[in-house]
Length: 102
Image (cartoon, rainbow, N blue to C red; front, side, top):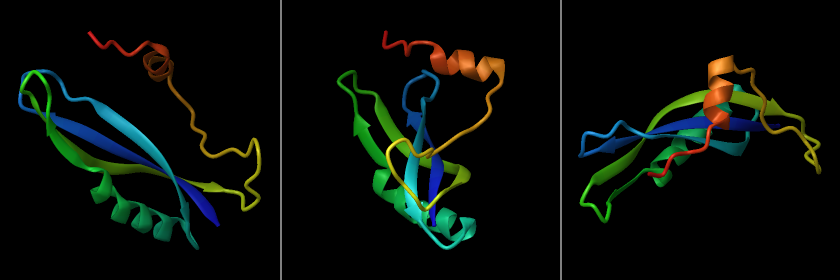
């Protein structure tokens, strides 16, 4: 069976700016949700990174937690649902707001 696993990453910064968050949703083949979560956690180290920006800010992206594991039907085809969740009004507004790069 397939699962989509939502992984949350958080940036650690050397300046006073608030951290950024990233949600990654990956596809995992597993026999159950426990195995899917374990497999997903093993992959998180590969995605963590550290770098210095052009403004000399040190940033480290670190795995924070598995947010959820979502089962997917074995018949993966065009238009198959990979992930679904309910949102509060404030969450929807936040997701729909443009990301401010300034």
